[in-house]
Amino acid sequence: MKKLTKWLEENKITEIECITPDQTGIARGKIMPTDKFIDEKGIRLPESVLLQTTTGDYPDDETYYSLLDPQDIDMVLRPDDSAVFTVPWAAEPSAQIIHDCYDSMGNLMELSSRAVLKKVLALYEAKGWKPIVAPEVEFYLTKRCTDPDLPLVPPIGRSGRQESGRQSFSIDAANEFDPIIEDIYDWCEEMHLDIDTLIHEEGAAQLEFNFRHGEALKLADQVFIFKRAVREAALKHKIGATFMAKPISGEPGSSMHVHQSLTDAKTGKNIFSNEDGSASELFHSYIGGLQHYIPQMMPIFAPNVNSYRRYLPGADGNAPVNIEWGNENRTVGLRVPQAAPSARRVENRLPGSDTNPYLSLAGNLICGYLGMVNHLKPRMPIQGRASEEADETVPWNLEAALEAMSNSEDIRNALGANFVDGFVATRRAEYEGFRRVISSWERQYLLSTV
Ligand SMILES: NC(=O)CC[C@H](N)C(=O)O
Image (cartoon, protein in one colour):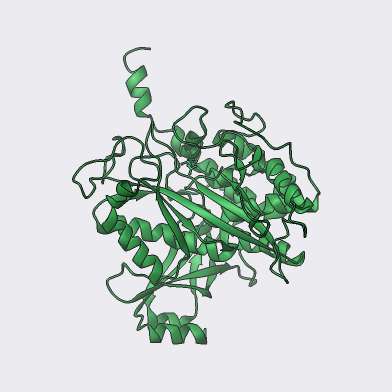
């Protein structure tokens, strides 16, 4: 706290956003003047904040009361002084400080997604392993739209025109949004986010930012903050930005691919490679773990009804519909990029951009961990194009995915039964809400035909 107080003084910070990610990845917390923050060294919030859905609803009563105190008591949030960022878009000098959530006994709240990631990282630490990850985050810039019944359209770029067609990797198409991109870059620099490259993705006004590889908790924090920054940069320029997995029919979806490797915590050496440069047994069993456990982990990689619209075989975009692996192969869900032995890694291409980054990293890492400790073997790698058929072992819709996750003893043991029950229950509550809304497809095709 001393170091943090000094930093706040040096940066003349007058206002603090005390934030924590809920299960959906939304920042929840309180805003206060710096003096009050320093006096109180933490805040209190109702525990139920961690069981809120994206729509602000809660799960059914039975789950709610089995996981939370019936009086809806407070939890205590304490700042993590290694997760402190300025707020470059704020009107006055401000800081956003990520907090951890503790229960009345002083333990990390099992329902907190940041705590779930810490739990997984502790398993790695006990083995003397340190995972290294690199997320790639895609999103769309869109024209502002307040009517949810109207489709989203691309914003007007610098040329005064709206983008159409496919512009993968086009520098000029990215430059159309230069003023926004400049803000994102400047702000990321000010906040010390480890942004590596920017590319224009396939979709109209779809961009991708890649993060430099590093430690998982640090990168989860950075993606959490990055998403806020992108939305704010878009707002400043009077447009929108969305991390929905499939915001526009007929356009590619948005993903959050995660590159993953494993190092020896002491030496820092990549232990996915043997001394002679070949792939290690750990590497193969890590992939075996991803293949075995992804079907039970889908609600984490694809948490919304909308997430599953990315995975339609033959749909626009390159979203995978399989969990095969292969070297330098973009038609599989688990791609092993061409790299030196010291950079040997696997990229999971399944997670959507709408995933909570803490849970996505925890989910990936626990699949790999369980694979390694149980010596699982991967399937044979795919050479050439993978089948266009969707892999039948994976639940490709939210209902089936939730069923698979809540029935998985291994995932319940690894991530915590209370967490799994709470997470599944918030997703189910959202799904129930979705089921009550009549869509434009129904109006278009059923209204006057059936
Ligand atoms: N970079 C890519 O391969 C595109 C990924 C694609 N946008 C998806 O949703 O999965």
